[in-house]
Length: 247
Length: 276
View 1: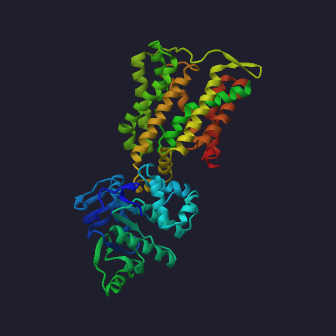
View 2: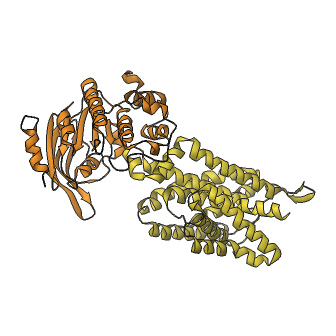
View 3: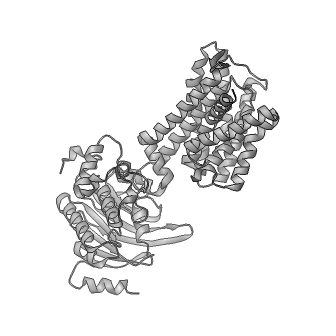
């Protein structure tokens, strides 16, 4: 991989990031989707946030990124409060985001989709090279509309787009959803390698237990807008989480 | 002769509507102060003439003045109203009235005259035709191509498209959507003021001149949706109808042709020409 100097959007510092969320409340309209969520992710850790649909997992990621305003509580990145900071500044500061819903511009080319994730066109070539390095099939199809990618290819594209900027904290929203096991395997190994090589801190929002268990160092279960249970990965973790995910 | 009339009328309609469409296309806001910006541009021509300068200088001056005032307007008036498009219509309508009154205070209610940018006629296929109207046709093509390039060929255009398609995703990728909106508003209003200068040889300049143009431009943009191609087609079709009605029926009926036909089209097909 290329050196830090060639990064399209060099992150402010190379040290792995630490994320702390304390008493976070946020939501839409009159409804609080999150109600006092607290957890902590250590530098270079992969953290799996599990939970059933509608428990506020996506809202949590959006609140961390500043897309949804926090109503109460605090978000700290490397000990510095970033609550209320907008997404543009947070992304420039080294947060990467792989959204779940409508994650790409269907009618624009793959190339333009990647361009839009860069801050300027100055280091466009380096960025493309890096993105294509993760999943080479993207290089051949760069001129095609992003909408022509299959479901699995789209997920790989979204991951490449986020990793292209070499974030120090990566927020990933249900990337394994609806994917074949072989693609899940591939995404899993890319994420693991990224963490091992660059110390990327990763917050994984998931419903796929096996995928999450295979990657994460710590986990938490989000239920009705709050953290219901949490812990380190151990032998009994699987049963414990399954208990929470059962209806 | 008729064909030239149709083409040049369509060109003038396009020039007048382009700035409104740019703002509507990206921001989904109808800038009802559009007429006021046409007027501001026209008075830039009056000022330049009053100072005895080259009348062509009015074009860059109008773009700068219009764009600067547009930037201030976006920041203080339009920005809080993106989620309330109806309120934005009221606010910009009110702003248009205020601008009209300020111009009246400053310059008086009288009709102003400006020196023509280009005078004389030129022979086209054996017919002698107004040189300025032909120039307007060229200007419309340049503006149309300029927008096509801005939208398809520049990073600002790409981010504007992204904001139009999916603003949440654009934000999630770190695009400063506020800046894109500001830039669009500045370009749209700057262009509108420039259009005001281009109108001066064709119409009288007075503080309320923009209102008549606003209605036509508004109807055309409603029909065109947010596509410059559709706007060009709409201008040709309705401009053509206007010329034909004016020539063969009555100039007074011709004046309202655009508005009536646009209303009819929207009645039959609510999405206008944008559906294709």
